Length: 421
Ligand SMILES: *Cc1c(COP(=O)(O)O)cnc(C)c1O
Image (cartoon, rainbow, N blue to C red; front, side):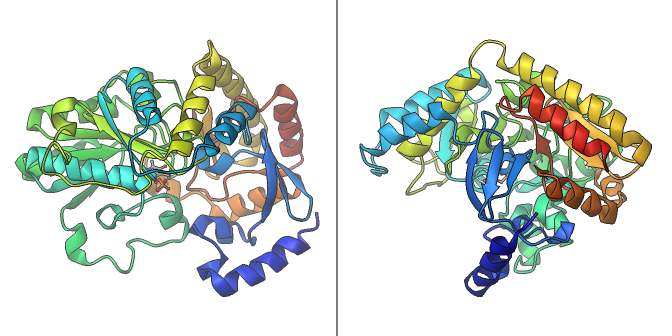
């Protein structure tokens, strides 16, 4: 596979963009490659500027559950663009998408749109602090909640991929109210609450951690978090930027049957445009300006193009049996993949249509165990798949996604390719 043009493009990009990329994991350093430059994408494949085609399981980090360049979304956006692309004045689209989100995820009684998952989480934490009049938050090792200063503590995703334990440029004081526990560790959470219980504003968690690779909860950990936050009158924030509209239409909270106080969604909800949202009960959300004293704003927030793309995407996902079919197809594929990979010392951790192959014998239950997986081996496997036309998420600390557009044919081709490893 020739990638000359991508290599050349990277040389030029590096002169003008730090590291040649606008988000670190794209640089592909952890897997010993240099970035691919995309020419176009359609469905579950993309084509690089050298003309190589890849079957994509990263799908813009989980955005394209309905496939790249989905015609329903494309058509809606093309039409919307003719009416102008931002006004800084309300549109009906914002209410339509807010109502839709609220209907699908009822705990999000009121919703505010922002431009990225980072902003959604940052704002949700601010509201939680404003509402409770408390400062401390609890997060989990390996969970990633965007790059706001106070959340860049023991973070997963690119932070873990780059081996950065805590970011430079974040003064200690900014993180002093962030308490960290290992995921799935009730005793650690207990200890934190017995010391700080009445000054903890919120516990924030990815209900299915996907930014340390997919690491599902065990032994009722999420229910435990719900119980202890209620007991101490702290809020529970589900960061569903990945899992929202991913596992079910109602997100991971529907999948597990647990209702958080605040929820963030992103990725899928913007339909491929920069949009994310946070929401919760009215009494909490009414803390926000202009109703209340917690300030939060955005020039392009609720942008009509992003709202249109989000509405089109959710309409596709609202069709009958979409998730039953998607999850059944994905679970079958993942089971077959596991059968092929197990003899090679690789275990697959998955929930529904999200999965990560880990280079260790047992599926990990927390970040420490994820960190023990063999990253050199992962990189070798990743490059093998790439060179055979399969683009997996390029880090051990990320998830892969099966889309409604991964047909049986694509999936069986990928299984055949995997057998050759
Ligand atoms: C991607 C992600 C974020 C950050 O979203 P951005 O749009 O990249 O700012 C936050 N939380 C989770 C769980 C994510 O997966």
